Amino acid sequence: IESAPPPANPYHNSTHAADALQTLFSLLCLGGSSYASSPLELFGILCAAVCHDMGHPGRNNSFQVRSKSDLSVIYNDVSVLENMHAARATRLLSLAGDEDDGGGNSAGSETGDLDILARMQPTQKDAFRSLFRRAILNTDMTLHFAQVAQMKARVSSGIGRGSHPLDDDDDDLVDGRYLEKFYQTMDGRSINMALLFFLHAADVSNPAKAGPLFTEWCERSLRELFEQGDEERRRYLLPLSPMCDRDNINKNDSQIGYIKFIVRPTFVLLSDMIPNVVTEILPVLERNLRYWENRKKVELGLPVDEEEEEAEEQETDVEEVVEAEKVGPNIVVDDATLSGDESLLMEEHVLKKPKEKSRTEETRKPKGDYDRNNNNNNN
Image 1 (cartoon, rainbow, N blue to C red):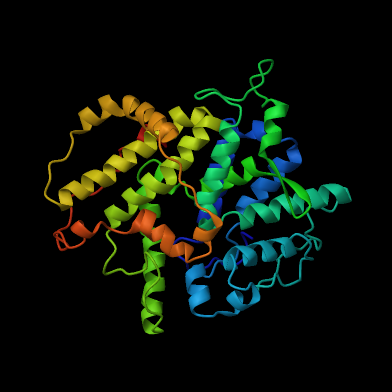
Image 2: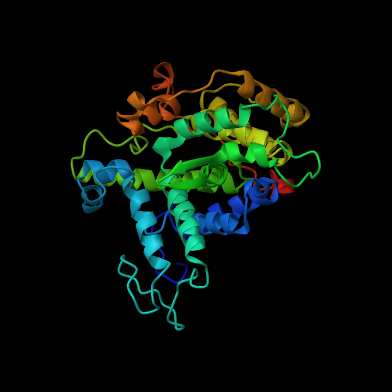
């Protein structure tokens, strides 16, 4: 995978794959590994992180479906890219060194056989491939709200608020009876949904990274989306896909909405499963949210909070956010809702600017840039 020619995508490239892998590994080290019932599961989910966007063309599912691409035809408009990633990655597992991976690239190995599962028993191979494939498919963002709702139900089932489901005899092991709640039968196999959720969290974790990483990832993500929007204009694929119109998307609004409706609820839920998230990740996320909110205030000509006041309130803010997310209303997405255009659902809930602010001082730019020394203690 690493030796293949890297795509020119600003966002979906080998660096994003490495970032998702490292973030998942960090979550496992913070306590997430206790949710795995075997080393094989940990191996499978880490491999899935490496391959979860393999061969990404830089144009999202909305573009594939609306342009009637070959991929959309092959996969019947359902999780088009995720199905392609999973198929190419699964094929790569059993390639010989001189074979093509399905994307025009040779595997590039001088040792011949690339099957890293070769010495496993058949039952181990089947278990690995099931988790590996399902984890990649589960990174489809249209599944996000349903996935969070289902995981919240699993976490809260039989567990008191504020507690962590660890066995009393061993602080490093999740109680086996509780762990059973995170397994779901899919395609005839029992799949560890907790590990799938950890990978999904790692995939959307950019706003929870210390500066300047979170601003760099934001720039790269928007650049790729805007390039898609430019191509949609050239091909008269109107209206443009959500978040792809460079003339009407406000960067600050997009990040504030993304954090509040997607990333923060995800990591607050994670903090119920991995308590270290409260001290290691949520403070960084809250500080980054204030950064975007302050930029928005500058854009609107409003006063900005002093950094000293923010630092003093940081610990209290995180505690209040965790409690508010726990007692707040759940977002429930039923089958009827998901049967429509999920990308538009995302835009309505997360990314669309409020109507009363859509025309407010559009030409004004916030002064100053993000302080690269900010958050250094959290790198």
